[in-house]
Amino acid sequence: MREDILRGLQKEVYDRCLKPTNKFGMGCYDHIKAVVKNATFLAKHYGADQEVVMIAAWLHDIASVTDYSLYEQHHIHGAEMAYHILKEYHYDDAKISLVQECIRNHRGSVNSEKRSKEELCVADADAISHFDSVPSLLYLAYVTRGMEMEEGVDFVKGKLTRSYQKLSAESKILYQNKFREVMEVLGEPVISA
Ligand SMILES: [Fe+2]
Ligand SMILES: [Fe+2]
Image 1 (cartoon, helix red, strand yellow):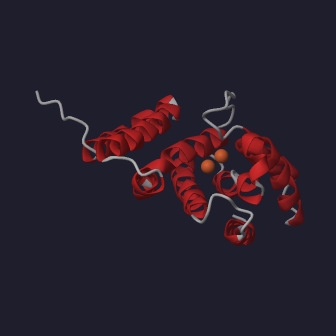
Image 2 (tube, protein in one colour):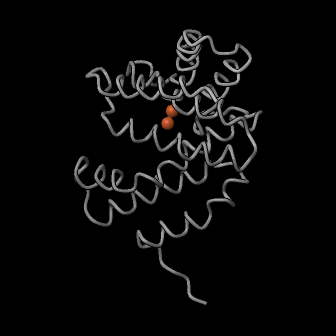
């Protein structure tokens, strides 16, 4: 495991998130950290290359936090940036390509075929990371957007449902209890037998 790269990337991402050019604020750093945590778990679970998955998770939104104008195509620009960053660490070329594929295909909203286990881990970790940030979603609804109680709940539940639907079939099964529990806490009517 290239601990030097992982430590370096954490610092690099943290520093870029802190800069005023990052329009998403520090919540973005928490998001990326959550993606790394979930991606590490999924890599172990699915027997994927853990090092590649962790590196790709740290870098998956690097273009968005670096330059807001790159957001629309951040999966493409991010893969380019990752190449240059990882070359500085003299990282293995074949592994850089795998990391780039994970970044290019991490977006559930962009129709792309995930070919490797590593790509699946990063994309699923990105989608499920919303479940680690329910407080920030509530903050977004009630404080930032000034929603009423019911509207806010629907907004958060809608976001979480769409995230869950982006998961691969196998990860949907893996996270189905978590999904159900969070929805229940938010007031999903419990169907009694
Ligand atoms: Fe992204
Ligand atoms: Fe992300």
